[in-house]
Length: 309
Image (cartoon, rainbow, N blue to C red; front, side, top):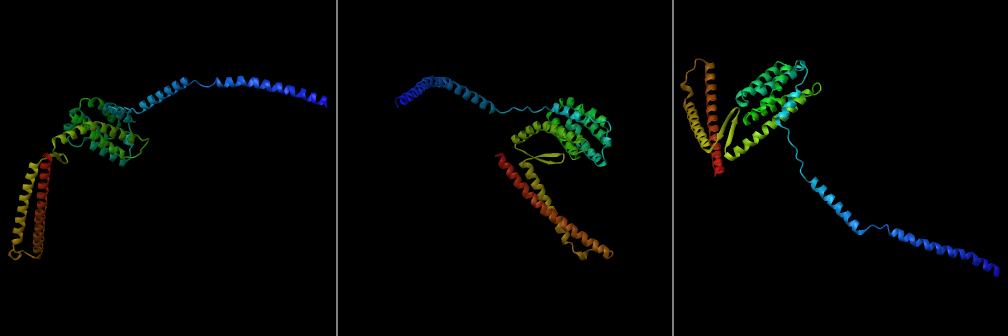
């Protein structure tokens, strides 16, 4: 028994020494792990730099993007490139597209084009419209190439008129639909975009001038008349006088008895009665319309007077 106990004690002795050694080495590992903790000052500086970078990025992203609009000259150059087509392109168009091309030529040079766009540009547009009517692709290309040089010499009014004509003609090209490789749609897009840029600035100037002057414009085709209270009252007086005259004429026709007139035959009698009824209806309608016109012009004159005040 003594030997067994002594052997067990001897076996327990290494375990004790092992545990002590384990405890001895565990302590440096604890100090090693504690040395990996980041410094508080470094962490604070890192957070500051990250916050500063984020603030700079956010301030840069909130800045509005400045997009420069293309100039009218560059757009006209792009338009001239769209007309770089085969020499027989327009001649190969179907009949319905040829008619649309003629309509585009009419919209481009319709009216007093020389008075609105100037001598050089007006003649160029006239020649270009003739080239479209004749389906001359080569002449069209050479004439369109002159437009960027002529645009620099234009006044604001001529530039606006030129832009409106380009938009009108471009819509005709747009109505032709897809043909070939989409050349017509490219021309349409270039013409409408260029026309919008040309007429945008001048239209804004004209609108501001009209708002400053406080006058309304009456447009009927090429006719353009400024509407003022004085002109409205004058028109009301003219309409009133015309209404009185129409009423008197209708009363004079109605006062003529039918039996006092002699007709050659029954057909002449029927024609006379129908003519009498038509004249009565015409002058009665003129009287009613004159009354409405007089009242409307008087109300318009009062409204314009109140706006001026």
